[in-house]
Amino acid sequence: MTILVGYVPSPEGQAALRAAIGEARRRDEKLLVVNTTRGDAYVDPRFAQEPDLTHVREDLAALDVDFDIRQVLGARDAAEEIIDLAEQTDASLVVIGLRRRSAVGKLIMGSQAQQILLGVGCPVLAVKAEG
Image 1 (cartoon, rainbow, N blue to C red):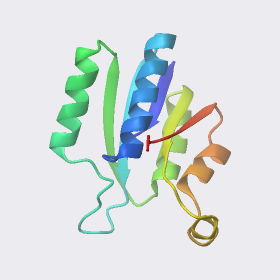
Image 2 (image 1 turned 90 degrees about the vertical axis):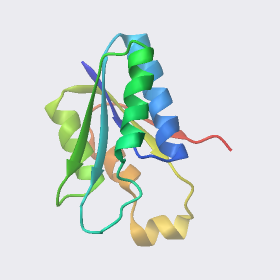
Image 3 (image 1 turned 90 degrees about the horizontal axis):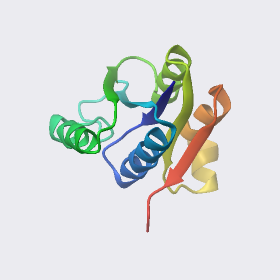
Image 4 (image 1 turned 60 degrees about the vertical axis):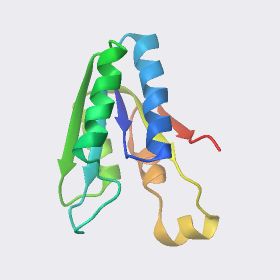
């Protein structure tokens, strides 16, 4: 089985990664780190750059965690990619980071987290960054 974590280079992404590492170690399962972008903008701060991924690789290797990292550049949004990858990999758990947003912001803009919570067929662990 696999623990899938949606990773972005942010405090929320780091919180999700830490929680996913803990779950992967506790369950003795492989960790799949997923970073995705639609590619419809010249700059997407959620799309991890190589220094970010190198840091993640080094941390996971030092912790002796069995892992894979996938970066997806496609026409679909992050929630759709995570939902599909969770199904394809038969994930036992999906871990996502939550950021603070107002109720009005969620209503108007929608929520990637909400899509994942409703669309994934396995348990979802949602974590917030400290502070």
